[in-house]
Amino acid sequence: MDRDWTGLAENQRRIIAGGFSSGNALICGDRNGVFFENYEGTVRGGSGARPPVTKDTLFHLFSMTKVFTVTAALMLLEKGLIGIDDPVSDYIKEFARVKVFTDGKSLPVKEPVRLRHLFTMTSGLSYFLDDESGCGRMMAERWKRDLKNGLHWDTVRFARELASAPLEFEPGKRYIYGLSHDVLGAVIEVVSGKTLDVFFRDNIFRPLGMDRTFFRRRLPSELEPLLADNTAFINGDYENIPLPPQPVPIPAFEGTEDSAMLSGGAGLVGAARDYGIFLNEFLQPDNLLLKPETVAFMTSPKLDAAQRAFYNAPGSDDSISGPEHTFAFGVRVQDREAPSGYGSVGEWGWSGALGTWFFVSPADGVWFVYMHQHTPANHGAFITELRNTFYRILRTGK
Image (cartoon, rainbow, N blue to C red):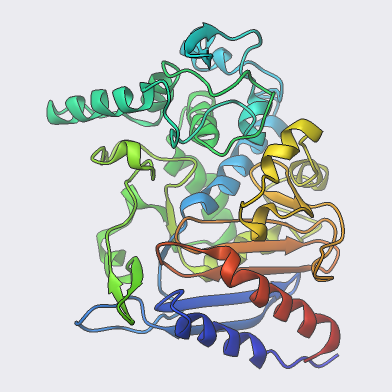
């Protein structure tokens, strides 16, 4: 079937006109490669020069980093170097003493935090958005003091410090979006003996030919000018605004800029084309990264009914946690027909804090990558229409 994809480009332009981004990238493909690629708008706002978004533009991926961390950890699982139900304390000993915050008190956990809990965000590790115990703020203050004294926290040190803050709930009892994948990144470093940037480079980026994806802290200086700015729509125009705190993109950690910490949950920057290369590999029968049965395991529903109730909480972003979605390992997965009628059961994907969003549909044999940089991301206000347009054209040709 011949398909007319111009509706996607029109939708991209509407996103810009609607105040959702100054510019964006959209690239879609199937097992054979790219069949649609388009770039619209500019990489920055403000009164100065506004270069266009191009194939070379780099975007902060933030939480779209998580699927790389999950993939890397599953590589270790395939080699028998970790077990899915291993206690995290087997690798980061401080987690043997982790506590849970209950009724205003920090009490020892009844069950250990296991690797499975990190993969599925059921560990009780939060992003400290509701830091009732105050331990997140205290941890951030310790980090800032160390930085003033020239002492850095690397990925493993961050995980060790994180074990001092009580969990939001007993491991496995609920789902909560948080720092689980940052700890999983530390486990990868401990087991492999390599820092995350080196492990990703050697085992994912180089084998796939991804030469435009890096940890932000390791981005070559010559590529710095390619990074898109974060923008907001203010008084009828796009303005450049600061990024969320880094390397941990949450308010409690403002001022903890640390070049040693590589966030397995939010640390990567990359080009849309590179992300497409990565996703395309998951549709290949001879996947260079993971065995087909491992990919199926990674992308199958993992939450029980009680955990899912928190994932599908009212008011959450329908583009990733609507009623047809549940959580797998670092990605949402569609496990029932969508109210819109679009999408396919088995479709999986995720999003990033500044507006990046992707999915892979094994049933349709396609992948989809959208990227922009804007605060607030507000995915739910524009992604549903863009995704539905894609599926309509895929199935009807126009």
